[in-house]
Length: 85
Image 1 (cartoon, helix red, strand yellow):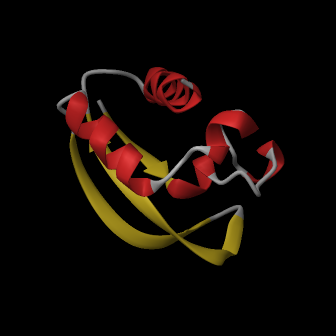
Image 2: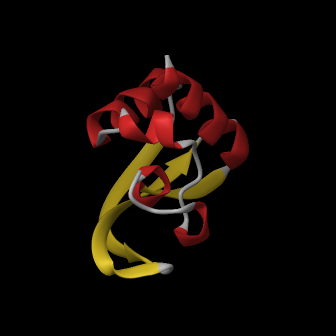
């Protein structure tokens, strides 16, 4: 499956309304290197691009196009658990 992941999903300053997809406690522990390491650990192919998230167009962020054997929601839940621990 191919899906996109924006770094704004993990920005603790964003409310869920503005696109944060994980809880604040896990978002507090986020950095981009952890995301890249997680994608490598599940053997996902990915590309990185500079962009702007549509709900927060005034901030720069990164977009990852991910090719993996899992769904996007499963990916986000697994990554949230990894950040929370």
